Image (cartoon, rainbow over the protein chains, first blue to last red):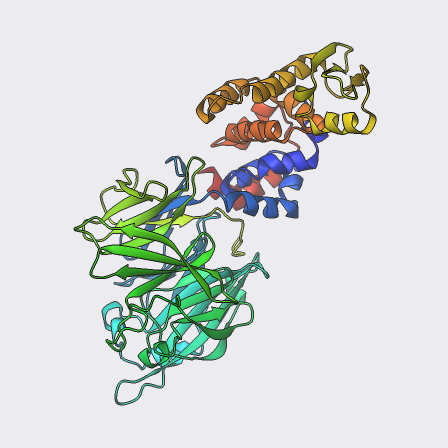
Length: 382
Length: 152
């Protein structure tokens, strides 16, 4: 057998089926394999293939500085399992999670770490000269009182540039009556460049206050629900930040569906945003019935929203979160839904419109589950 | 009649395979030959594939053509058994599937080969696939340092 007589295309084809971790093993096999695995086309093929194969990422919070990350396929086979030890001890940690390829760990007001589970890289993001100037002097407010956070974090991929950008909205210019502005800064992470070498860039004021609990990161943009009632009543329901141009714009919600979007109760937001199947979705609990409507923004330019799903929730359970979409070969796929009242993960079969308990996910302990995609992106730490 | 229903393939070692035209058409390479020349009763040479491999490839083509009523589960079981073969056989098959251009067969074998890599050390992979280690001691040490995380 002479593997070298195989066409490079065929070699690339079978290597594209391996995880990034598996490829790191295979590149040590021979010079020839190393050269094929270093072929830039492999990255493109790998992304095409693995973007169709979502994985499950489990984040297990051992203590305030230690997380265990386990990545497995939908059949439950473990592909990657490792411990993240963060060098800072703090009493509180949140995970800035969105389109789950890179994970941000935010431990206190300024410290921020970014991790790529596929390559097991962990890097500290340099402090910002902009937001840190304010965050140290300001008292936490509103929702921030709970979390001791003074900023809103999001991370998104810019497909056109193959970069990730961390976006931080931070409180600034607080007035005596408690009103405050949001500044916006962006940190760019370039493939293969050490995170250390990057810097924050101030892109100006965020045009309005936004939801502190919900955002979506979709195809090169971050979307937040607008928290300002006056703006919402002008049909500016969603704020979008284009990660490539770094410009803000407002987007209207579904035309014929106003409940919760224009809620009378001043700043109350009853909908959340998220990514499903590469589209931004508006998820709204339709009260008083226990029904969850999932609207999908099919065409942003012409503002076309389509009601993709109407989900009847189990009678006792209406505090829930859609964790992601899991495609299937056999039917229309499942939505992974977390019910917070009984702390249980469910699959919602889109075709049969039925719930089933996600047995493989409901282990004991403090776990969070995310739909995850294997990827090559290097944080430049090796 | 412009089209013959049977097609004759000749392997690299000279063996003749008389098969249904529809079976042969699963190979895009043969499909192009038939479209271009439409050889009536002619013998199509397959110089890159020996008889043993060609008969196995044709077995796959027949299975995936005839049993249109077979459901997905049956196919995946049959496919799984089909690629449960020695490494050299898989190698010959993928070379043949590549030459004959049969994308689903390439896909099936690539999946099988990829599954054989799973959880293996580079030493083990070299052993399975009969590959010489052409890295120096220093280079190996360097790999261990940089890619050590991937071996845990």
